[in-house]
Length: 299
Ligand SMILES: *Cc1c(COP(=O)(O)O)cnc(C)c1O
Image 1 (cartoon, helix red, strand yellow):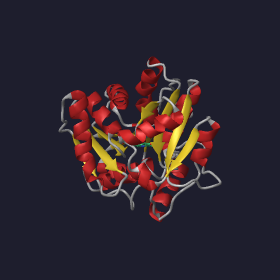
Image 2: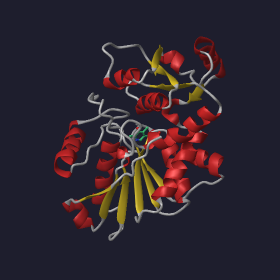
Image 3: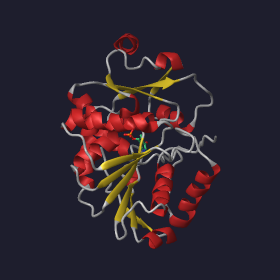
Image 4: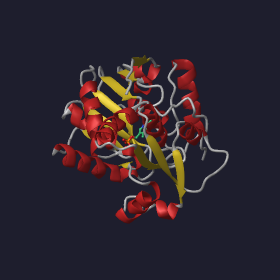
């Protein structure tokens, strides 16, 4: 897969000056035009494995707005593989931008009821998919599996060469946090901002992932669960104005699902005095801004 070296963007704001901290944004959203951000790293070794095992089809799961569905479709297309997206819920026409993009990359969409979707990790359900679609390389919802964590660990090692004190990133399933923690190997202070309501379970999720993949539970990270703005893909007028302001005044494009909530949380924590004076905060822009994207879910 093509990889563009992402720039570091420094943000200047009075609140940062008052707190005497520096804020750098790692613009990993610019690492690839279509398979951007953390999804690039999560798919890297999944793609390698699929090719190694001579698969010709990638199959994965997601909601209708899933960045992971979009990235999987693009990866498959770039590598001349077929792709199948198992989408939660009923088809709504016209297709939204994410699914239109996935289709343009040749992804075959298959809708399943919310009830059936709940069984997506069960062997019986997966067997029925194999009966229907033939053999495929399966990537779980959100893309988090051992191969994904291997990719995000590599990313974490790369990030560890940047000079900073705190690393902040959004968290959905925990695959990115787990790998980055392993790549940093106990160094620095990591804050993961949950984009889900009731995200407390993610603490154990990440610790289990690092235990299973790296035989370690890391003590240098914290989960913040109060910045979800109503829940996954939910938003609010203040968050939307914040995103517009960051784009217009700071030339920093953010999405509503992940990175808008991340930057909001970082600046709020700066105001609350969480970060030591004189320190550098690295916020990881994990992507989510495909040029196809224009829809916003408002609460
Ligand atoms: C998928 C995604 C995440 C969540 O990553 P996890 O590994 O599931 O925690 C964060 N940011 C963006 C932009 C994403 O697309």
